[in-house]
Length: 209
Image (cartoon, rainbow, N blue to C red):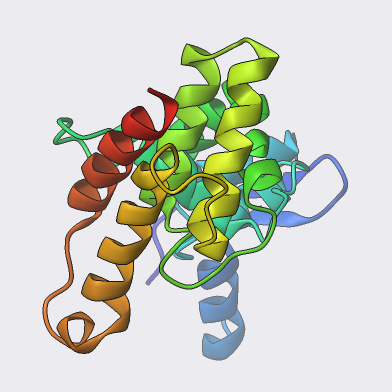
């Protein structure tokens, strides 16, 4: 027996079903009629927040909202989350809406990290490292310093410093990443994301100094 409740089946402005998939499928499988409320003309963005039985990640939510994320999506969103967490914050349960709003507000800084390191490289382009560069984007608005941020990324990825003493911050970070993620030590317990973030921040400060 099916009780009529306030929970409606929802259809968006383009006629696509956005809420009620599981209920409608159950009705089809049962091959029995059931009373349901129907709401039409729902905004497309509302699907981000609807409880429809599907586990959507940030990339799915962005696509539904018509705002596809660049750079593979997952990497872009991961950097945003690491920026939001920082080093000290204990709040890791960010909703998709919060992450998307954060991305909208800080898109230039996030894009900058992918200008500095255009391609993902194992160990060296972790979200915690990119997040440190994104934060530095705000602390160093002068082009000359931002060029130095680009140099940091180049040395970190290549391991080839122009000046071993001047560029030692990036070199030391690279060596630490290789030791902890790429060698024998990397097989066991790897450093947590906040440790990577803190190491990267220290290395970048040394590099810029």
